[in-house]
Amino acid sequence: MCALINSCLYDVVVVGAGPAGSFAAERLTRGGVKVALFDGRPADEPKACGGGVTSKALKAWPHLLEAAARTVNEVEMYSPAGRGIRLKLKEPFAIYSRRAFDSHLRERARNAGACVISAGRVSVSAPKQNNECWTIKSTNTGEQWKCRMLVAADGANSAIARRLAGALTNSEMEVAFGYRTPLPSSGDVATVVAFLPRWAGYAWAFPRLDHISFGIATAQDDFDHHSLNCLLWDFMIGYYLKREDATSPLWSAASNARDKAREKDVEEKLRATADRYAARIPGLSPETLDQRRTTGDGWALLGDAAGFADPVTGEGIYYALRSAELFAEAYLSGRPMDFEKMWRADFGRELRRAGQMRRRFYGSFHGAPFTDRLVDFARLHGGIRRTLCELVVGDQGYVNLKRTLVRRAAWPF
Ligand SMILES: Cc1cc2nc3c(=O)[nH]c(=O)nc-3n(C[C@H](O)[C@H](O)[C@H](O)COP(=O)(O)OP(=O)(O)OC[C@H]3O[C@@H](n4cnc5c(N)ncnc54)[C@H](O)[C@@H]3O)c2cc1C
Image 1 (tube, protein in one colour):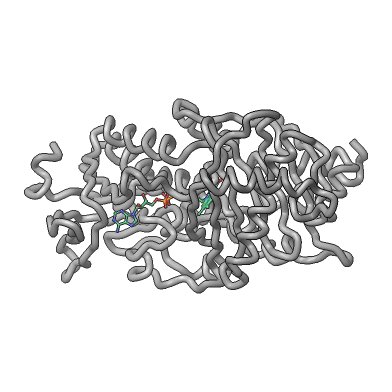
Image 2: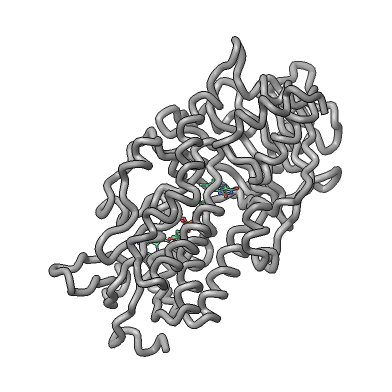
């Protein structure tokens, strides 16, 4: 089928074979639509990502567990002051290598009958008249393809979204960067989330099957690479030292009495193996979310291209998949423009609320960082701890978070 591509007119072209694009292509193809999926990612460059997928997503799409992943039942969470809590999760979440996750979804689209085209990056020219087609052009080879409906699933830096819906400001972008490193040779491979001292955002250690993804996410307009990179190295070294000695501090530089030789040894080994990655994550303000369009005549935006990521946590995989599912439903019902109201009714309120909460979540509360208070409270109180566990796995939303916290805080269990 793909051999005929240049003479075909596709019903739908999906640009970007990340979770949003591949899932949309699969769903549309299964509904009888002629779809081309453009995969612009070089095979040796996996998407920069923690790879954490909540149990909410695993329950919605159980086939995700067919892709190789580490499932996690416990998360260590630390406050900016370095006080920790172990959250035992009622339902596990999964941590994927993005290579495995993305290829699982892309192969499902291909097996469903979508034409997967690896032509490098493509550019798009808009229809000149309403009933004309979009032209998709490979920037490598100059080959061209035509379609009636254009779906942009080309990620946080989407050139198509910039053109059709407008650019996002730096304050609506998170920057996340990190390193892939080998699994520790001894000790447990804990999953760790640590709220940053002095910065909005957090650092993570997400162990996958054969390596660990470390990272830091913070707001782009606060970004100071040198300081954050130092902080992340302290966190990574602290993580490895803690595998050998549980009493080690979370951030290696936090210790004055530390055995500097051990620290240096761990750091040298890490520097020789660590593979760096960096990328942006959208984190839209409520106002932008309200105003920015994600559909128009013959086009739609999905996943990160549409700005669908949680501004508090940076979680975007669930929203990428759910937006793909909703768009396919709207398109197959013959009313693609309904997608706009469908996502707003489905997860729009949650993203809006997260956008409102971001500043408070990383702000201060009665003289200390809110995240210090949250972890301290959860250490003491079973109800708050339970709510935090539910937030981590995606079962507790932001819209009724305050109500749940107040209700549970009243009962000491
Ligand atoms: C460091 C980091 C850590 C993260 N950790 C998590 C996490 O643990 N859990 C979570 O849920 N979310 C996480 N996210 C967010 C998550 O990665 C994204 O929300 C998710 O990948 C969005 O999926 P998508 O399909 O919309 O876009 P993407 O996954 O970015 O896919 C877009 C695709 O489009 C392709 N593309 C772009 N331009 C073109 C073009 N011109 N032509 C052809 N192809 C093109 C790209 O190569 C890419 O394959 C993280 C993000 C970052 C940066």
